[in-house]
Length: 122
Image (cartoon, rainbow, N blue to C red; front, side, top):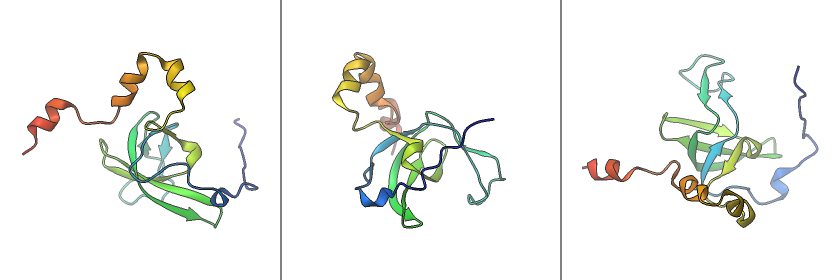
């Protein structure tokens, strides 16, 4: 059985949002429909770990948490997620980029259109 991490004492909205509008983010875990996503059954996978999306709105929940609406373009799903479920791809700290070395360039292209796809658009 897994331990459930409770953070009820944390008031996220006392601080600025962790992510900005249009920021490219990656999902840190699988997200399943809890019944709030229309057109999918409860338990259906909406987002896989590593899926890349863009923050399209920032709201609050229970006057305590930020909820980031993330548009996952490849799947067409727009899902509300907490900051702990996401990782930025646009604003990685310098020490993380240094550790990634040459792989940082590949990370920078995740979720961006491929050049051949851009040329194919009308």
